[in-house]
Every structure is written in structure tokens, then in C-alpha cells.
View 1: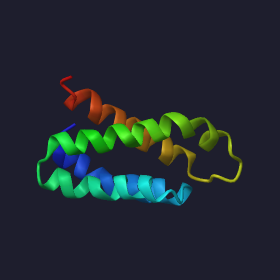
View 2 (view 1 turned 180 degrees about the horizontal axis):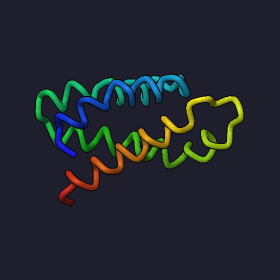
View 3 (view 1 turned 120 degrees about the vertical axis):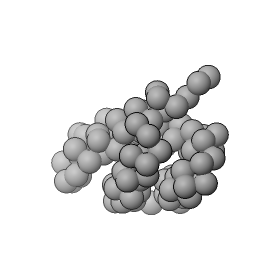
View 4 (view 1 turned 45 degrees about the vertical axis):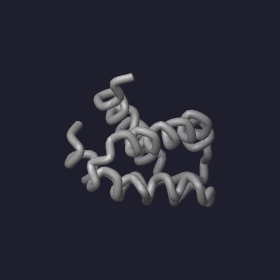
Length: 92
């Protein structure tokens, strides 16, 4: 996944996460992604991606099992997109 492809997906990721949580840190991390992708600051992008993946690691089961969450497939897509980006760009 290129940075441009990831940039295209970011607004969807932000809106999906914001529809579930009111955690200001998580919302802020997701909103900052676009800025740092545009600035080509891969280190900061990966840091933010890891924080969002960690949040999803803790919350994806609750999201997928919650009968009041109507956009489960978008969360699964966002989570997978973040993991794919990390796998392709994390050299550590």
C-alpha cells in the first residue's frame, strides 16, 4: 500500500473510529494521520498507526459483537488497512 493509497483511506478510517469512540486521544491519533502522510513523516505515521492498531486490538471484539454497532464491516476494513500499512512500511 502506497502512501497515496493510504491517504485515500484515512478519512474513512477517521470517521469509522470517531463513530465508535469518544476517546480524545484515539480520535486525535486518527485525525493526525493525513497530516503526517502528506508531510511524508513515515516515523510518525507508523507511530500513530501502531497506536490505532493497539486500540483496535483491545476493542475489535467488542465492536464486532455489539448489536448496536451498524458499521462493523467498516471497522474490520479500517483495522485491516492499518495492519496492512504497518506490515508494508515497518522495517523494525
